[in-house]
Structures are given as structure tokens and as C-alpha cells.
Length: 89
Image 1 (spheres, rainbow, N blue to C red):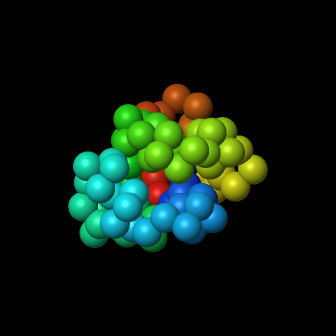
Image 2: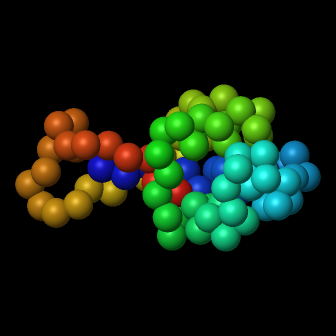
């Protein structure tokens, strides 16, 4: 199961008038990586998600609560029992 959050990360970043370069530098990742995360081209692990949440001063639940789009891979998978990974929107 993937939880899609990239669009919410971008909204939080732009609302705070931070550039990709600003946030990527603080998170110690490349601008290209952050851009891929925001465009749902690259997954994100929990540690980096929490780091970005802190940098953006956005509580994690605000980034996923109402705007979650869940994807399950394959048919017949019960998302409650599959491994979870946060995925960019």
C-alpha cells in the first residue's frame, strides 16, 4: 500500500514560500529527489517524510489526513496486512 503525499508536500512548501533548493538543502537530499517525490515519481521513507514535515512546519497528519489516495498493488491484497510505504503525490 502506498500513501500518496507529494502534492501536499508541495503545497506546504509553496505556502511557506520555500524553494525546492531551500527544502532539499535542509533535508540533505538533492533538488531532483525532492522534485520526484513531489511529482509522485519516487517513494519516500518514513524518516525522510518526518524530516520534511519538520522542515515545512506541517504536522504529519496534515500531510496525509484528508488527502490520502491509497494504491494497492495487485489484486486480492488486503492493505491492512501488506507492507506500507509513504509515496509522493
